Every structure is written in C-alpha cells, then in structure tokens.
Amino acid sequence: MKLIKEKSDHGVLRLIMNNSDQGNALSESMMSILMDEI
Image (cartoon, rainbow, N blue to C red; front, side, top):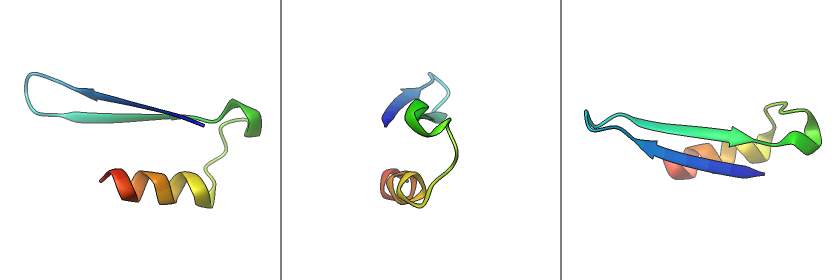
C-alpha cells in the first residue's frame, strides 16, 4: 500500500492511499494507517 501526503500553501493536508493489489477497496489496515496519520 502506498500513502502519499501533500500539504498546500493554505494548510490543507491531503492523504492519498493506493492499494492496487486489492482494487483500492478500503480495508481495516488502510483505516488504521489513516487514523495513525491523522
């Protein structure tokens, strides 16, 4: 799984999660990684 972090000049943080092995279905592990990043 790949996690890309982008922050704009306006202070907006964008997290892009890509898990092409599972067709990008939102999984428990992806939710856990997202919550850790927030």
